[in-house]
Image 1 (cartoon, rainbow, N blue to C red):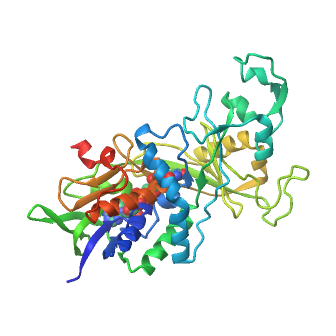
Image 2 (image 1 turned 90 degrees about the vertical axis):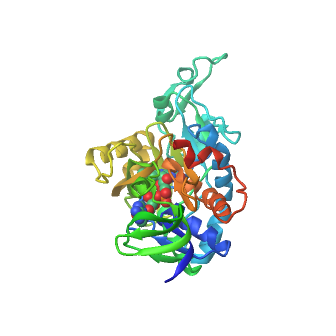
Image 3 (image 1 turned 30 degrees about the vertical axis):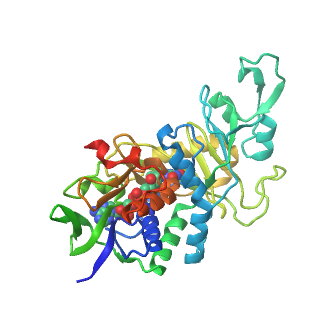
Length: 394
Ligand SMILES: Cc1cc2nc3c(=O)[nH]c(=O)nc-3n(C[C@H](O)[C@H](O)[C@H](O)COP(=O)(O)OP(=O)(O)OC[C@H]3O[C@@H](n4cnc5c(N)ncnc54)[C@H](O)[C@@H]3O)c2cc1C
């Protein structure tokens, strides 16, 4: 009977990234996946590496910054190992946080309307207003500007955030390939029902088909983590619907004569507002997301909500009227009771959790993988995992 050093339950971005790091530490790894690798939240995600967002909880900020900083190296390794591109883009994010909400991140920079128009002409659409409407507290009178309608709508100034984004589907494919190349074993189509123990220590897993043995087990089962006996890790599904649009023509010519918007790139930056975010891919696809819903394990899309997302995109960037809907989908984010990740050893020695990444699992994958691999192999994690300990829910 084959034994592994570590069994990872769930082959999403977290399980796959951790498997690679454990191979760096020369551990043998089995990934047990109930469907196919990277097919759930990882497949559904937008891929923003949004570490400058003011909604990031303060306690998560150092971890988020560390993970974002690891991204270029993380992706470089996966791309060279797999031969696949992950479309890591570092053009940056243009964000509107609404009146009274400013980013606290040191890297965030307020944009003038002119800068905004230059950076992202797709947003600089024709709403001519007195700028004093937007800045009623300004001490000196401000001139009339053409400002983007989104700024009017959101009653707040635009910010530039030096963030990256990645294509999570491409990342999932590349990670899977890299893991296979690095001799990570996989069992797919097998649902783990239970973590097995002997003398109070984790020693294996039981699936719907078989049992597998290892010295350490890690629950990376995302929104489904709580279903695994005997110690449910308290995640819950938080549904997100998204829509993908593509330019009417991907042939490469100018789409909007005289607009300066050419080729495949209708929009260059990630754009975030309180109503919607827009994520461009290098191949011309543009994602509009996302809903945040408590709907259990339901992954159906609702045409009315998809239409609303598309309309919200059009309101901010009318250039999107030159696109057509390509597809729409829903995925289940792994929320936790306090919406922070759950990272560390559980009350069962040898049984670890690496889940609950909620809206940030793509961003947090590199730091999670490094710190958890250190912990599982008996090293002191180089990032502080104490705030995310599973014991906080005991
Ligand atoms: C619409 C949407 C947009 C998002 N946008 C972003 C974004 O822009 N940036 C960002 O950082 N994050 C984003 N996220 C969040 C991100 O997708 C998740 O945090 C991340 O994918 C979680 O990864 P995971 O590996 O934990 O979970 P998953 O990718 O869901 O993987 C869990 C895996 O475990 C498997 N599994 C479950 N139960 C079992 C079992 N019992 N036995 C075996 N296998 C099992 C599942 O089949 C699945 O493959 C978004 C999510 C959604 C839904």
